[in-house]
Image (cartoon, rainbow, N blue to C red; front, side, top):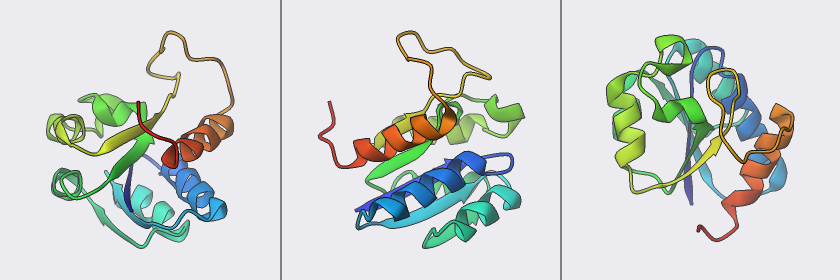
Amino acid sequence: MHITVIDAQGGKIGKTIIEQIRKSGIDCTITALGTNSLATSAMLKAGADNGATGENPVVIGCRKTDIIMGPIGIMVADSMLGEITPKMAEAVGQSDARKILVPVNRCFEVAGVKQMSLTQYIEEAVRLINSPSV
């Protein structure tokens, strides 16, 4: 199984996702794709197998993966303080990969999502990896 984790800004959410995947023992290859080098570096330090930075790696990486994970903003152009470009959001949205997104209520409110801590959202996201998709 190949999992691509996409994050922006400081990479905290992506870093935590990768740490939780590694802690869970899921057998997979993880690629970290950051919108900037700080995010990519944080995810690599957390245990990603490889990583790259910028728009083109995100576009290409979304074509060649089984699961895409990250904050919900990776699907919205100009989100995450403008770090998600329209091409990035389009690549995530058009990918055939299963998408497991972490709701972050700073930018978006998702109806029906119960209030939990960021850590709890990420733990739930990691649990979804081995569950059948809807």
